[in-house]
Figure (cartoon, rainbow, N blue to C red):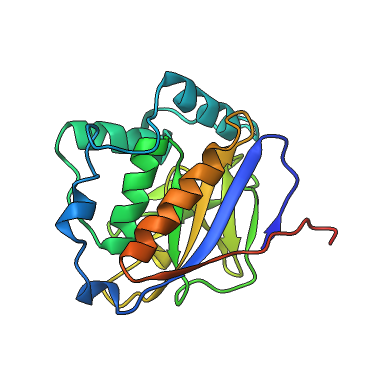
Length: 213
């Protein structure tokens, strides 16, 4: 994966291979129980974490507020209001780690995305559809994960075209960490991969390189 130079980004990326399609492996109750603000977790989000993430996203000129706030902030509100239901094992574990770490996380279906993959700031005029209703998000200035067809994920929304479904067996995860929160991205990745491996999945780190490599 090519990662463009960025003074704040501490990207963590790995792939996951599930033993069965996601539609055939419901998330165990003991894992779903972690989708609570009161659950025991290795860390907890707070105002300092939320501001650090927003500063990361503002660097390219994006405004992470309102409907464009980081996905990790949306999760806190949704969980506190009891509005977040189980989706599938891949997304549930993603939401658990994002909720407690305070870091936004993208998950894409590797069968739908097309390599090569790249991470960088989206140029003006960039957008993608992010839900089944056809709604679009303006990506200008926002750090994004790109595949061969364009942007497919970021710290706010992931593209509808590469989202997981019941047939998904392999995913690519990108944790949008920031250097102003030392080790938080690495700790989030470690816990994330442990949870997935408890479900019988296997994970593998994605090699990263600069554009000049």
